[in-house]
Image (cartoon, rainbow, N blue to C red; front, side):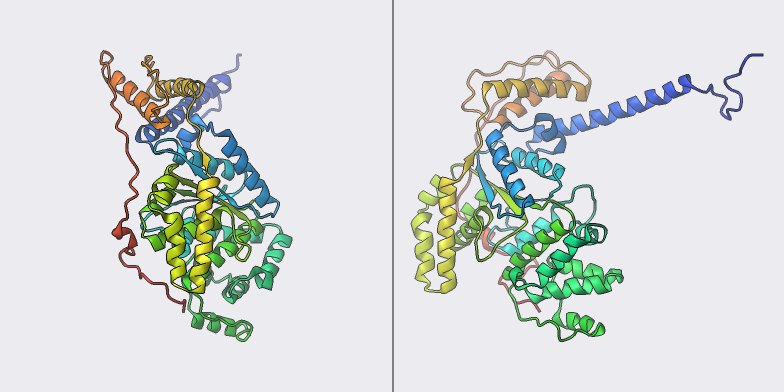
Length: 451
């Protein structure tokens, strides 16, 4: 009597290799579909000129020197040294946003929390409070999903107790130069963290929301420590700078390598009024060079700006002379400090800008071949060869990439069609815009002390 392979199988299917082969085949089909979805996402992103994870993974980066400098900053943060930041420059379409996305994935892979901040009307570079809120809202945490700071705040309970104890001692020390709200809220979080609603309230304070002094005193009184801390008034600007220090050290205590901030479209500051440009130059100096009196430990930053900014704004608008002169004419100590820092920021733009390298013939050829492969696999066809212009100097990488993709798109729809792609150069607008001076709807304009 021979063995029946379907015996004791409730579905009546043979056991062993044939059934496993069916499952393996289905798994391969599913993996193939997932790969095509990722490939199509990459093509769509490159077509629109907005890089995403799939596009960056497909093309990588050819900016070796910037990558090397960035890795040095990451190593400094890991070692607990002052890291400073990088200022990178390129023309429209040269790949600044692509580079930032590439650096973002590099930092995430090395265990850093990463925030992308796009300078805009809602997020002006000269306003640390709005920059902080944007950085927290846009933060990505390696291996975690959900509200970034809430995930990070919960992490220390499961990480190295010694690192968390050191963080607590630092928050309570004079060396931290933090307002007592941070020591008090951290203590309350440790003591009353089992109350999820109040714990969330404390985390939202660290993330940028206000918290009333009355509420803090009432909660401290509940645990018999009403007189331990005092809470003088503090401006949102100063509180935001302290939040950067607190949050970055909290990330390190939670087991992450540090915090990386990536600023895009920094050239928008050229459209601010002169005084707002002055404050923006000062903030740029903070992120790139740092200030001894206001250190930002456990973090580094990369700021992307157009490479003609120095000529178009610093010189044609005469900011090198007008900015410090206007500030010093106000005869105020705070404006004098801003003038010094603004001058430093302008010098950094002039002297420390790392220019993105233009594509070489070898880079373009490799990119063309990779895109042709990607487009073919994404849409399951064989893209034809496309004519490539001999002159490379006048075209950015974005122009090449979009021309190739659009050419293949059209040929896929009509194999006999011969596309002609016309390119029109966009000039960066540096004219002052009064609209950028207005606070977003529903927000107060002037800074006020926190209650």
